[in-house]
Image (cartoon, rainbow, N blue to C red):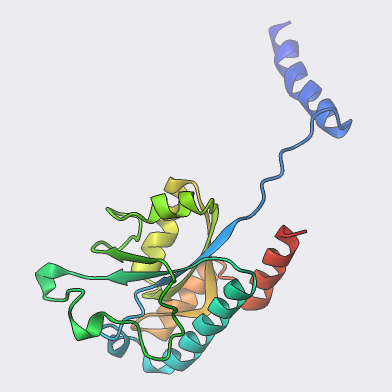
Length: 195
């Protein structure tokens, strides 16, 4: 009897769903773009072959987010123990990157942009639930922030061709392993979420 009852509960739940008696909650995507550590100090350490494409793709991705009036958040890394501070010339983002002065700014000292920063608070204030990540390094701070996003209840995606590391092959592997999304797919997701 107990076994029959245990099988009956999931069956009743399935019947409710299929008959439309219980409506599934639709969660609207509320995205933001994180542009991570594309600083003058770090660019020379990245693969020269990827630099132009990645910076161009970051600029195009920022353009898409601004077109839809979505937040672009710039994330900077500093390490006072290393001698690299906010006052250092290398702290600034690469000159080719089309960052705006009013883009929110987060400064971190750990690989993840969530660790000991106000990023989570900023995202909650803006009612963000989905993150798209680009920048550097694909095997360091971008990947660390991506994996940490889930523990803060955010859905996260990597932006294809908009990341850098010291090895083009490593970036390609990360894009493949974590199903990085191309810009066309991202635009489609944003458009669908607004309908």
